Length: 124
Image (cartoon, rainbow, N blue to C red):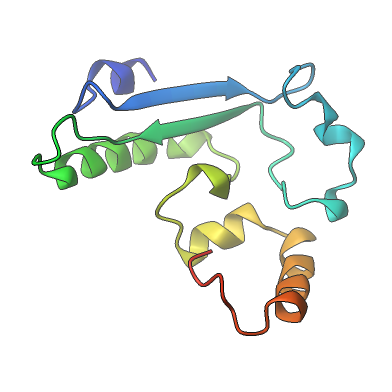
């Protein structure tokens, strides 16, 4: 985390670590909802990490900042226990399955098929 914060590729990038563990006032209610009643699967997490890559100038090469954020994510990945898709812009199929693991994934798949049969929300 310290290295990531010290090597940001832009002054507009950030590394945000939020507590979601037991006793966290923000997420204290997570444990009061059964796992099969919500899409929030990573209930065993103590923290949520958000990395943001932003160019200070619209003319900058965005790839530099994106690759910097991805390197940081890869370096911190060994400590991860899941992913939270509301904090992601580049969610691939593997990350979606990681975020919505059982029992969540099968239930959400059924709900989406019933509620959105034309798959309107294709980028999820």
